[in-house]
Amino acid sequence: MSDVFTDADPRRARPDDAEAVARLLHDFNTEFDTPSPGTAILAGRLRSLLAGPGTLAYLVGEPAAGVALVTLRSNVWYDGPVALLDELYVQPDLRGHGLGAAMVRLLVAEARRTGVSAIEINVDAGDVDAQRFYERHGFSGTDPDTGERAFYYSLEL
Image (cartoon, rainbow, N blue to C red; front, side):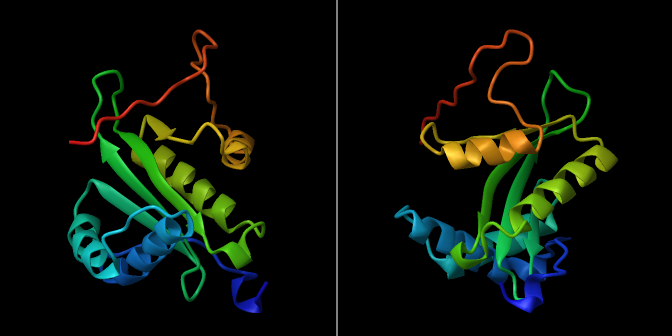
C-alpha cells in the first residue's frame, strides 16, 4: 500500500468533489461489468445531489481511492431519516487496508450524530465477502424481530 494512504481519514465529499466521486463510481461499475452513464454524466448529477440534503458521499485517500455513496429518505416507522448505503467502493489494489471500514465507521458516527434512525444496505446473495464485511460492522441480514432472512426486490421503471 502506498504511504499516501497509511494515515488517510475519510471525509465527507462536497459538490466540488463530484468528479472524484463520479470516477470511483464509474470504476466500480466498470470493474463488475455493470453499465455506467460515464463520469461526465455522473459528475453533473452529483454536483447537484451533493449540494442538497438527500445525498451524501464519503471519500478516502488523496487522491481519492474509495467512495461511499449514501441517500437519505423519510420513513413512517422512524423518527429520523433512513440512510441507504447505495455504493461502497475501494480501488482493487488498496482493498484490505481498512479504507472501506473507515468510511463505514464515519457514516455510522455521522448518522448517529445527525439523528439517522437506520442504515440499510443491499448486498447480492453471492457476495459473501461483502456480507461478512458488513456483519463485522454490526449490520444484519436478518429481521431483528423474527430472525428471518431479509430480501431485496426491485423494479426499474
